[in-house]
Image 1: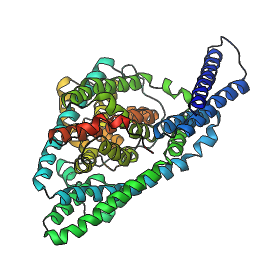
Image 2 (image 1 turned 60 degrees about the vertical axis):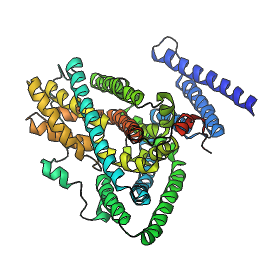
Image 3 (image 1 turned 180 degrees about the horizontal axis):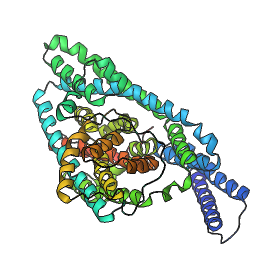
Amino acid sequence: MNNLKHRLFIVNWVLVTLAALATVLDKYEILQVSDSILISLRWLALTGLVIHAFIKQNLTTSILVAMLVGTEIGYDFPELAQNLKFLRKIFLQMIKTIIAPLLFATLVAGIAGHSDLKQVGRMGWKSLLYFEVVTTIALFIGLFFANWFQPGAGIAPPKDFHDDLPKVQQQNWQDIILHAFPENIAKSIYEGQVLQIVVFSIIFGVSLALLPAAKKTKMVHGVELLAEVMFKFTKIVMLFAPIGVGAAIAETVGHMGIDVLKNLAMLLATLYCALLAFLLFVLTPVALVARIPVFKFAKQISEPVSIAFATTSSESALPKAMEQMEKFGVPRQIVSFVMPTGYSFNLDGSTLYLALATIFVAQASGTEFPIGQQITMVLLLMLTSKGVAGIPRATLVILLGAVANFGLPEWPVLLIMGIDELMDMARTSVNVIGNCLATAVIGRWEGELDDEKMHASDQVVTP
């Protein structure tokens, strides 16, 4: 069996190398290769990779191969690719059915099952302090890179735009706080309001913890059983993940074209550089200070991050991220409290993007935006970026709100929308990385991180 895998690996590399080499030679007109031969070579290479993924039976490998297959389908058959969006929607809808019961069960079991209400309070203030510090640093990094690269400088205003921008209602700080509290839990579940579900679950868990032990135990056992069922449910849904992810990439490439990176390349490059700097100079030192092995951590979260990257949805990665961090050695009660809370208060990638995009709008429109006003904008975004959970295209809505607050024109936002999908992939991935790391940091801060389990995490093979 090992010999077969080794031979297949060599054959795959040969096919991939041939396909890549032929494509590059033809692209730069060094050697003319017919389209039929190029397509055949690429599909032969992809077939080998699909067989390899099937034999390996690893979710991360399957997702990465599915992304390559989806890219090829989008490139070769754009019309077919755009019709595959129903597969992406199936996957996202199935994930959304998991979110509410999983959050409710894990939070309530974590709070009521341990009966340590003081720990809930400690985790609350520690989490909020950590989230606020890290997201504020992210905003200033976005500000720095926007002023350094100046991606919006020299852009001419477009003559005709027919895209419709969403209507934005101005929110004050009272509205944002009010939005955190549910008026109807069924409505919150239907609308995917993660923060409202979290608030309801915390209050429910505290109420259950206050009951006499005889009454409480029965309910806690039932909720713990629900949590176990939802983790099994997640594993079943994740079997469909490669198909959903592949369809998402195919739809993007089919709709926007493989050369979409050429459009607004400077803004895209600025965002990716800023996010990379944030990962290297903020999250990596945080991990090292908290004594978290960076490479083991990266390996553990590769599956949820790849799902988030392809689907541009943090929600789609939440169940898998929670499961992986528990395997990494973070206690369930910490994971179930910190991670869903982070989906409202710790969107590192999105907050960095908001600072960068607002400066881009000012640069593109030629508006004078002095450093004092930029600091004011950061303070505004520190507040408004906390209310984005559960809102489709939330960052776009918050961006339009910031633009309106500072009297900037809206047409540069329309330019951004052209490559928003590509930017969303990166910022959503960083959101997931930041929230996974936050659970480990709070676990270490609470003195409950299982070092033995954490260091052995890369040796555990998921069946």
